[in-house]
Length: 529
Image 1 (cartoon, rainbow, N blue to C red):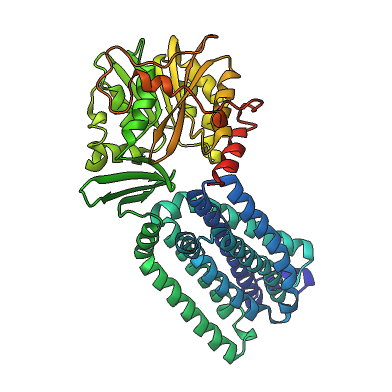
Image 2 (tube, rainbow, N blue to C red; image 1 turned 60 degrees about the vertical axis):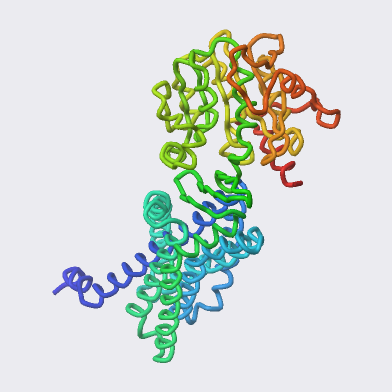
């Protein structure tokens, strides 16, 4: 038999098949570990965006620290290469424990200790160190099965690593979050991480471990599994307890939607007055005790004039809608709010629907769950009055709703005699952000009149009445305005007078999509209070 004839038989020999199976097992472990590592990164970013609101800032902190720490971890793994199998198993167990518990631990640091940022930095660094140590050790293990040139080995490992990252990146938002939530999703991934690392070492590389090492790893894995399973079983109770720690009043409704954390609290004073409050991502949206002051000021000064067709952007709680519907000659109201869960809460929760007087059941109302920016780009209708009742511009997600581009779309949706009212935050707590809204509106050639009212739950709160043309519009109450609790003609005139220390600020730059200056103003000012 010639040498060329013997080669195929040698390639299909049992040792060759075992080597191929072992190499495949290593690459599967690389795939799973990469998927788990990316889930840990995304979980930290998502948690920060929910709790803090600054998605770009949170992503920058987490990703930069983890990438840096991964480089350090790769270097730190060099001395461990002689004991690659045992070291890899130990690192995976530690990574599974810390990664699985990371969301739970950071939530606890935020809720009870007010140490979220230091805890986030420490967590990102430790997880990055452990993730960075994986690839060098897996490279050693791969070469022990069958030596090959470095380029081919790196190509195989990185291919499995990148594909695993793809799967982990897609699984987090589309599978883990919807089915398990952040806390339990991270714990589940930790279990998978531990199983992948330990399974590889105790099967393919079992002979490289002493009996004592195998027993230690099995005992450690049992401990890690017990901790993760215990945390998984307690996760729901933990979330309820931690969430309640964030609010002074009892939480009566809470859900985490694809867009935000929605929390409703309710308390009662000794005199029996009930206070229902809605929070989105921890930010107060209204207090039932004084919300009428905000919504009367938002709606009624713009209702003098044509008002047959009205558009409400935001305001998913239905409270601005309630005020609009008090005018019987309003024929049609379109409300666009991002989160269907908020709309459903306003419709079906008796605590909220009683406040908005079942506004969503009015046949004149059309409620649309959609992103207002995207919806305006497709809109072809024109409206007599538009209310922009959006959350404050304290995050990248909301800053675009205060941009020149957004207000240009709103302007396009108004009739020639149309009016717009924009809630613009607090001229006291965030004066630069407040006056930046006006500068942005004026950059489009729109005429504006600022005014402010006192809302005890918020403090001094400001709005801008906006029309086309050069003459500043006059906020005034319609002659047929319904009875109001906080506004009359004299109060509205006084609302347009700002004290000297809160007067219009000159030289503020308009906010745009590419240069969201309002975000810098808002984040710099609100941190002072």
